[in-house]
Image (cartoon, rainbow, N blue to C red; front, side):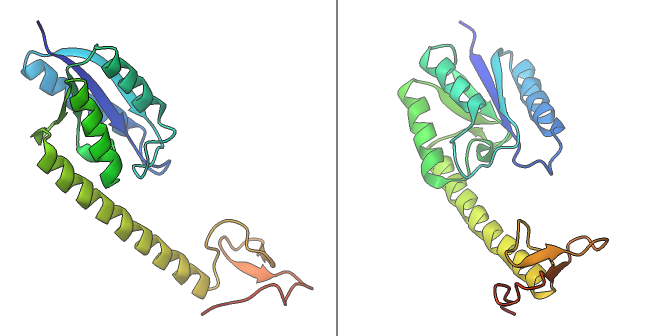
Length: 179
């Protein structure tokens, strides 16, 4: 009986090229062809964070195929396409194992408890570092008098000066600066 491989691909933000999914799928298809496996479907989520599995319809559909016995292997470019959250990646792996389905990385081979643990840990650390760096960048914008995104209560944009703000007349008491 041929081995049925489901491909899963994801990209995180609207700043990334949506062709990332096409590239991930093409990479997986090359491996499937090279090893004489059978493609059992492509599942993908665009503009979805790796911090949670919530709201990822492609992943939900993939799990339905797994639960329905239509898949023998889930193939991803890298385990962080599933999740960078340590607990969620481990739980996803456990669910696949429950249904007798293997999890495999294109370049890393078959996942096991050790690779899932290590990739989950490094993914979680990546997210923590990324949050710290984003906050540092936003704080730097604020200290330079620029917008950190969103609406700043008591401030308004300066026409013709993107990212720059001015205190709204009459609201000086509501506007504050922490630098």
